[in-house]
Amino acid sequence: MSADYSIETESLGRVYRLRENKKKKDQPRELVALSGVNLQVQRGELFGLLGPNGAGKTTLIKILTTLLAPSTGWAKVAGYDVHRETVKVRPLINMVSGGESSGYGLLTVRENLWMFSQFYGMQSAEAYKYIDELLATFGLTDRANTKSADLSTGLRQKMNIIRGFMTGPEVLFLDEPTLGLDVGASRDVRGFVRRWTDENPRRTLLLTTHTMVEADELCDRVAIINRGKVLACDTPAALKHELQQEAIFNLDVSAQNGLEAAHFETLPGVHKVQLTPFDGHSQLQFILAEEAVLSAVVNTLTERDVTILNLTKREPTLEDVFVTLVGRSMAEEEKAGSNGNGH
Amino acid sequence: MNLRSFRTAAWLGWKIESNWTDPFLFAVYSIIKPLAGAAILVVMYSIITKGDFTNPLFPYIYLGNAFYMYVGAVMTGVSWAIIDDREHYRTLKYMYVAPIRIPLYLIGRAVARFLTGSFSVFITIVFGALFLHVPIEVAQVDWLLFSVSLLMGVVLLALMGLTLAGITLLLARHSDYLGDAVAGGLYLFSGAVFPLDVLPAWLRPIGYAMPITYWLELLRRSLVGSVAQAFPTLASLSNNQLLAILGGMIVLAAFIAVITFRYCDHQARERGYIDRTTNY
View 1 (cartoon, rainbow over the protein chains, first blue to last red):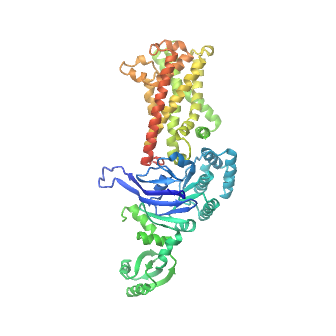
View 2 (cartoon, rainbow over the protein chains, first blue to last red):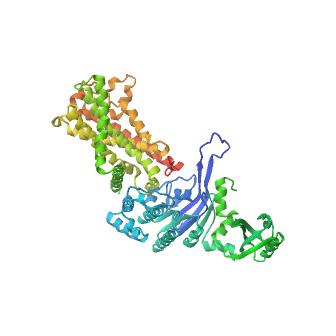
View 3 (cartoon, chains in turn purple, cyan):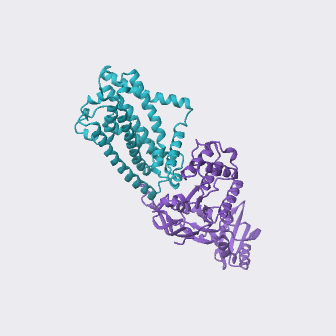
């Protein structure tokens, strides 16, 4: 393994065995959460895992943080095998999971944080100093002596984020860190995450998110993951650049008769089309091979007595990258996954 | 760092143990609970023996029952931390990610239960000596034997708790009853409430195979030697022989605890149980 890699995985896979349901014997007994994941995250990188709920992001983090054994392949963090060398990995890492209310509610915020500092071998005086600094950074100073059970979900989440950063890990794993935070708090957290990584080139941060803006704004590189497989991995700019040769249009239309995406899919030069009912109208999103294809789209709309209310050309986003790779939006993919009728 | 983690875990355990009420009520509860338990036993004994408190059987039962409080307190204290952290506080995964020795952390968490258990045992014994004529004379107590035996017993119970903690890692629902179930099962066969001679001959080997039997015998001998001599169960063994047997059993318990915990820990990571919550 190259010494420059903080995280490296090869053919990493994880299969969960499901309990047999005697009433539904035809149900699958295994769930493939990860399959053939190959990743290299360089030291000092802020790396994002972007994918819908159930894509395998949390499973990957659990493996990398030594909580879960892989079924196939291997993974190394800070140069150590996460399955066989857990004792060497753990002093170098920390993790924070978003959207949960973990923590000892009977302890104050300061006590909770001090306790974890002790588990990481920090001297109390040094720990208190750093805790107070971080509490001030995250606007929690006035809540330092509040029992964490009395905090709102968002404030408790901030406390957990401080717990993750406080121990000075070489590799930090943040699993949906802004889940449950309001817009302002999310922005503060993103700002801190970026500064923390930039301050020290030895710090590596792996962040999972299903928020496109977060991945786009924050990460040096992003891996798009869906159904346990990494579909693409590059800088956000490079991922979007792939689509820049194409033309992306959003159209708000009013249709008298039924309108279906299938009406456009056979047109030459139409790469992707999505139809979404919106506020009494329909919203169409086209990814076209080139701008000239738009005239054929407009002709088809006219033939079907469809009135165009608004037409916009826009720059590609990571959502478009996801749609191109998967064939549907992240929200649709989550819905399909939860209904069990995906690909 | 291991000592620091242990101390911190003990601090956390104490915070959790004493959190549910104010200190005064906690103290009252700590006194009333063991006395109520002892009172039930005394009433039952009184009815069965028609108030014969001079029989050596009474101090035998009373002391065995008093020290048996440690079994539930320490053993369940260690294993309960798994349930508490995983299901209630949802912090077990963070403990696992931290560079601590999980067994040491779990044992640290049980220190508070050991302390409250010690208080209960002390109150029960003092009450027995003052009001129920349990024949303890401070000057006659073999304090060295008592201290060594108590220490060995606590180590033994912590190791048994660690074995249960390993098994608890692989269980989900209702595994909080595991410690109580094991403690209840051992209660009948360890000579806590009656000498092993009372058991049918074919059941006695269970009692002889259990280290708690030897531990309780040693504690009784150190406090009231005459009582222990009144029952033939272990009379043929000297104190040193009992200590040697207990020591050997502790080594065996340590071996079992290490192997079981490692195996269960490995299995929990294989199956993804470290952070599994059942929301019951």
